Length: 387
Image (cartoon, rainbow, N blue to C red; front, side, top):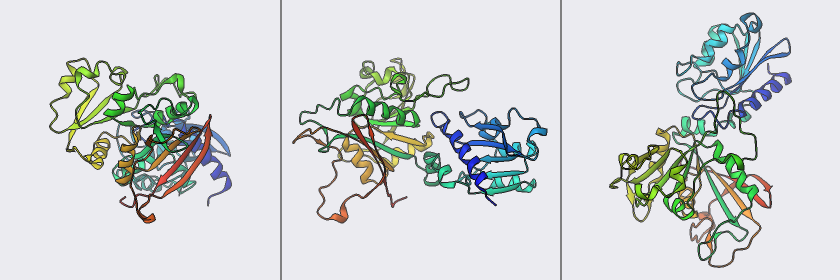
């Protein structure tokens, strides 16, 4: 039976899990609380892939005598397989806990009920599904990979009140204010990868990195995470404009970030060509490319899945955003609306259509809206019937 006390301790575990949201990728964010005699005796969260999981960290300073008979609250089913670390389900058995309260089952096929089975076979009482919605919300990217075999895709857009991303002559810097730009850094810091286009890289000389001086929170640095984790940068470059000799003058290639260039399968450039110019952090992926329609974005997402990118943050022009929406691959739109009117002839924020019937329009669900500095941030979810 689930009690109000159980809900409170699981809520604490959820908050702990959030402390890993900038560092754990490709692993999920997980929190754990150990309780005995109505007292919390251990807390832990997963900090980084390859290091201790939440349960291990929560038990780290406890003897078996201390943890024996305790209840463990964990946001995600304890793992049951040997990966970079041993199974957490076995660690809980060894610790002698008598009850485990689980936020939700792990949809990873390597786990998916097996962790619960290990606990129950050891005689441990198990409760599943406590604050399940909150626990699931911790890991949209992880569950997207496990359940849909593609990343969770967020698209960032910035526009004026009249829906423009640039003036008629292409000028666009800056539409939004410094608070909104700092807010974007938070999303970048959470993402596994930032996806952009060669046009954006060339036009804006965009570095596409996380800049510590702009972060609006204290990034969790400790003995496990000594530096800010920089997301990978995926660049769609169908016309192979980002040549090795061009890269030398671009900020993106001089930040130390791992850049994945997705080019036409017939492109003459290779990783070795970039390496010879001193760019060892460049990977070249080659896909089919149509000069009219561009890359098949499902193929691009397959590359991202293979690279274990759980969450992809798309930051480019409106045309690429429109393609993601049209192909039903976008999961969230994060739109910053600036209190500006940029006038006729400007570039539309999402150049879809034209539509002749209302049933052709794209329906969105409003998830959140708030003021960020002088701008408004709107967050929408999309229903992708193809999933």
